[in-house]
Length: 111
Length: 116
Image (cartoon, rainbow over all chains, first blue to last red):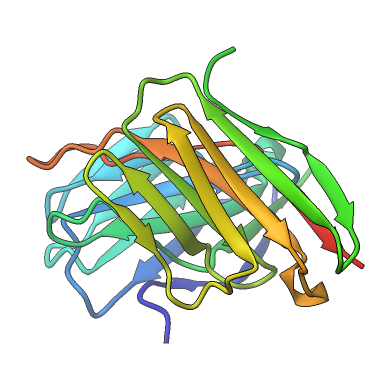
């Protein structure tokens, strides 16, 4: 079983619609990160959340860390084709600096 | 150059070949990583080098061997690979801060490896 479960696995929406992807675990994380990976490239860090209940906004992207620090969500408002990519969540437990990754959510935004 | 640079970007090798992947980081980070990315699977940590330790994933076959000559360079030596080793191999670096903070990784663009 995976330490971090992401859902849905695939998501295809029309430009202008909203979407939410989820990252869940039974483990507690000291920090959780979201990355976006485009085809042929490596993942790029979007945000790090470290406090339970924390909400961070990055333009049209809103990230939330669960109160118990076991889950997180990424919400995109008015999605654009440029948001297309593989979204990965990754977490660190305790003082460990090594991250565990989820399998990712592939998001496709159609023009 | 800035960031994390991986070469080559693409590699096709036979099962009897020996090749090496190279990674270089210009960020002054103190930890470097090799990850394997296969379709529909989570990124699999293969090896870590930091100022404090070298970590190996025990499930990685011995046909993969890492080398880290200094804090800026990381190699992955490949020999007698199998077709199931075909994947995207990603290098990453980070600044390890034991007292907490942002553990964000900077990834290279990866090497797409095909074993024939």
